[in-house]
Amino acid sequence: MDHVETVKRPDMLFHLITGIEKWQSDYGLIPDELYMGMLMFIHLSAEGNLDPPVDLHHLLRILHKPSREWGIPGLENDYPENAPLLEEAIGLVADADEFMNRFISPQDAEQQNMYEILKYCREDGRQLQAEYTAIRTFLSDTQHAVIAARELNNFVENFQDSELIKLIRCCYQEVTQELPNFRKCPHCGWTMEHKQDRWRCNKENICRHFADMEMFESFDFGKQRVFRLIPGIQRFVLLPGISELRIAHRLRKKGYTVEMYPRVDTVDLSVSKEDKEFFLDVKDFKDPRILANFFNGQATSYLEKYKEQCVIVIPQYRNVLFREYKKRAQMYLNEKARDYIRIVMENEVDQVLQEVFM
Image 1: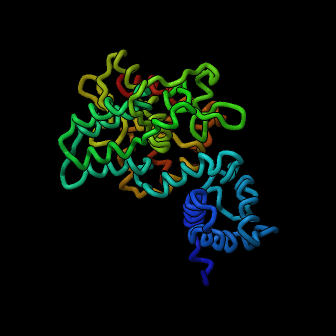
Image 2: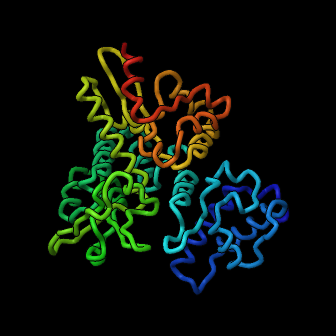
């Protein structure tokens, strides 16, 4: 920590988030990661923060404020400027989860468990296309957000590979004992919890924009053991997967041939008609600047797959949550990325394909 130039904003965020996660499981011990994150915070905010943290509790008060008030130059390129890191009764906010998702798996921006499945299906020349598509489609189905042990067992029995079975099971956690405290989300089928005098589905609570969150039902699995998708899979696989499956279903009805997650998830959808093929890649980032910076940081070799043969599709609800999402994301792309990346909203996909297949 003697050289300020060696301290990087993403590393600071990673240490703070990791440290807070560990601390929340044992408040009697301050993790080394949290202490290191605080030192990094002090270094990075030395010039711009008029009220730098003097101890851990002071730091936590600052982290409850929007990040633009932390006094760290350039932080908006790594973390949404309107978002805090912590929120009362919630703990780490959804933006922190999204940051960790990108930090851990920068090339694919997938939740870590799904990324491990992806890597396994790709490596050593396996190219397990059918297996990957089956797994990703299963996890993207709202009917599988919360399932009985028997149904999970029936699914994994379709696979012969013990390592792949283990990875699939890691996408679920048992909630048999906690089930009476949950309600079924009317949009995604996952578990809602009662917090701050209302029912919430995961941290970002996206689902409230699609369904009446007071029109819910209890889970009824009798005496069976019950499992739910872990929170990261719900957020980074199930929610965008709902959009992916909806797009695929609509395009098939229009006469297109659609393949899900082709070439072991090089992109999300392959759309074909006659002898022509085009690709759609659904990206579900909460903040358009962070989406743009994801592509800004990629090598040309990664971006090449998008040029004139693939568009980035943003789920329609992002426009509701962030006005002019597409326009802002396109504006934040740097010159190199702008040459490869075209961003469209979900409701523009039909028009794009009409242009491609005319």
